[in-house]
Amino acid sequence: MPNFTDAELRLLSLLTWKTRVAADVQLARVVGVTDSERPAFVRRLKQLAHRGFLSRYRVSVALLVPEAPLVNWLPDLSEADWQAVAWKLQHRWNELSATRVWINVATRQAAALVGGVGGRLRQPMQLQHDLAVTGVYLVRQAVCVPGENWIGEDAYRLFLQPKARVKVPDALIVDPDYQTRRVIELGGLYSPRRLKGFHRHWASRRIPYEIW
Image (cartoon, rainbow, N blue to C red; front, side):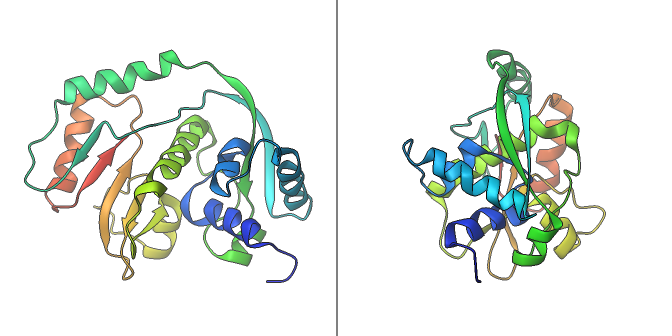
């Protein structure tokens, strides 16, 4: 495509297919920007915003940097101790402090260019959660399996139109035929009962899941 670098198209595709929002520091990790390259990279993001492909906002938010899933379930494994998992989910945010960061959201113009979903955040009040989902994506790219692809919740809802009884998680790992191979959930202030319901839903379908 003319007037776009491969890195720019990759970033736009990330924000329309895989995640809803990403901070500058997260996007820099996607394309391997070094500290010395950071000013030039930010100028490129500003240019994409000026051209109408990104919306940029400066916000105060606590950025969760996940390292590994709290639960990594496979068929035939026993279920987790949901009381313990709920405690960890409810207390981990207490250890974080809010900081001022620039965040990026793809526009509808971006989605028209690379496909996927663009526009306003579907649930702006969940910004901290959505940025953490992007953090999970960054971690999981190191263990991605050839032939499998991460697809975000919004793109999944729009293009694959799941049945109403299916609980759509934050992201899904799908094969080339868009069959679900694993589901990804960023746990919020979930109760043990809600976690148990999440487990039963996917375990009954024998689909592996991760709760981060």
